[in-house]
Length: 190
Image 1 (tube, rainbow, N blue to C red):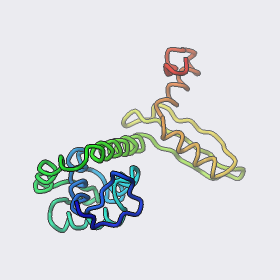
Image 2: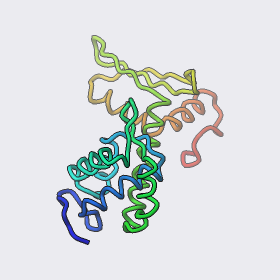
Image 3: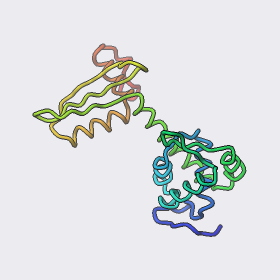
């Protein structure tokens, strides 16, 4: 396997060949079902040190130019029939560890995106600090909204990130505390 790609940020076992990077991108979009932006694909490969950021960007541009990947109006990418053939025919040539790491990172990113789509956090500056409202969604309506005060923007952002990390746990803990029913507590907290 010749090395014709930049290797900055690539961990041992990562991809150092431009063609392999193109195959990996088709593989991710095919197996994870698409729906990622170019930046998200770069994030997936960067999280696990699978490929160099600039090489991923170049590979993606080439795949789009060649008709293997297409973007919709919102910039979400999907693999075309040609790209599916690449993923099916050559995806198994990639090291198993690279495939597993890529799919794990893609699934995690999809789960994070779903959580952010289904729930929201509003941060509003007040005269005395910041008011943070965390909304837990039940589809078209809020199941619960919790508002709290924090003194600065840094803490407001920390509340936001921690909420997005586990909104379902926040919901269960508040429900258990407010209803007095310990059955709502997560198993590890009982």
